Length: 237
Image (cartoon, rainbow, N blue to C red; front, side):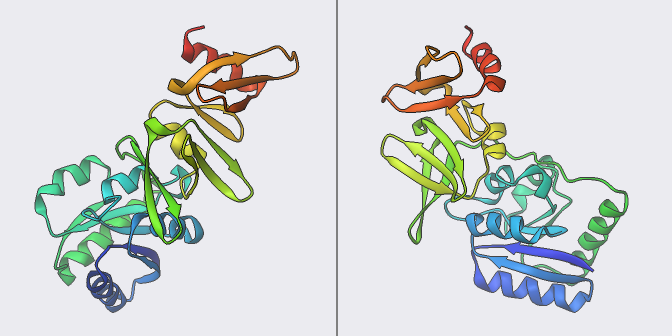
């Protein structure tokens, strides 16, 4: 039995697809989500085999969401959309298949066979989404999109991952690993920190046991020995 998550901003589309999947007798739907941020959380919690992902969604679309999935949590992806012009781009992103709305049962069965064949061959889905230029963050009941150019650093704690800007800190569902790989100019400087190269003012090494970055706004960011040399190389010093 395949385990699936559905992400689509249209309730009717999610319900219709969930009903079609139930009729196949081959799929258990472990989560349905109206948007990318909820989808990222559900993927991390449920680790499904397959993700049915709408492309055209407000805020963060399906192509952008693909970039934000942790590599070891990446399921097989089947894009579901009303627009056939996205087909080529979907396969460029390593999607296993592409379904047009309204989804036809026979075409859905074909897509599921592709997923089973893919998994049966022991292959791992690849993350081929575009670079992340806006980070979705939680702002009460709303989703705030923070430009990566505004970010001074990103830090992780027991409470989660925090995007730090001159205007404040914002909690995000994205991980340091994903932001390091896909976020422009975001570089690892510590196990729990990324720093924006464009925001570095100086590296303070007066303490022989530790190093610190000072950003242009005066914020202090720790640098561990492991990451100091690669950081200096990136800065050309």
